[in-house]
Image (cartoon, rainbow, N blue to C red; front, side, top):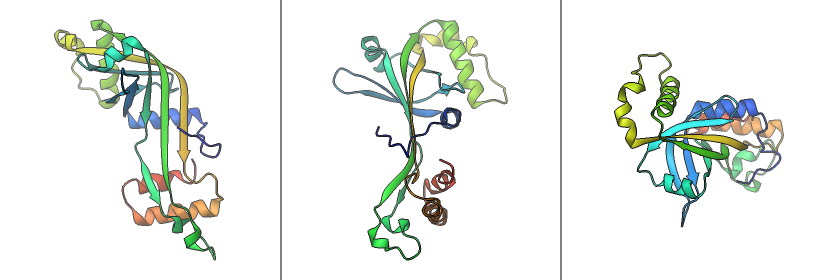
Length: 201
């Protein structure tokens, strides 16, 4: 994706927290004709260095990974359309504004290891369950080891993080504040998330 200097998201700790808070994305691998893209839940560590998840063994992504064990996991859950007129403040002509879209996006690129080992799969499942059910009450995945034959564990070691926070970083604080206020007033899908991010991202 294109990342301009004013959109670059360089705070790695903030990026990691953002990705962890989402926990669902698109896992993409080079396929024989077109890329294979798999929507999936995942768990990422607090430095964006490692991603763990599992998929059904029948998933076509595994054949693609055998040919090329590199992949991209991308998240971009929130977006908000910004009308051109919203960019005008004071005596500025609203008809001169150029519409755009505000959004955040992160791409984690890395090397993938696939496992069929029951202990490794159980470990991955424990990690995922602890992430979505932190209060406990979980059944030990090892008790379902007989079903592990239909799933495979995936670990991606991240070698590159591409992160973008496109929230009007190329304009001054007054224009950004005006757009944040209009987003909050409109209250459509993605508007509140974008309004909250404009001041800091």
